[in-house]
Image 1 (cartoon, rainbow, N blue to C red):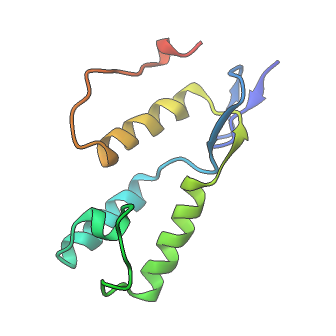
Image 2: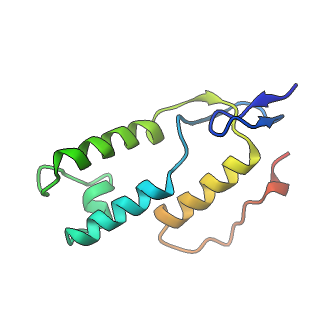
Length: 112
């Protein structure tokens, strides 16, 4: 029985998985990178496990955006996600969160 993808609302036959409330968003990841460049800090200083917003000049508007984005991508529950969304989220994750090129590839053919 076809279900609906929780992220894009397309029909899919994939089983439920534990996934974030929203996929990683390229525009937010680029915004994080741009903010870091403009303020001469590393991405880890703003958006990493070791970040301390008390030590950087983070304006309230950006802080609210980051808090909302963090809630969306860090809150996980069981839901149905389609193949295309899983693939795209994996690509965005690798682009912004991996510091190396992986030999592992993930394609639509890998998901049944």
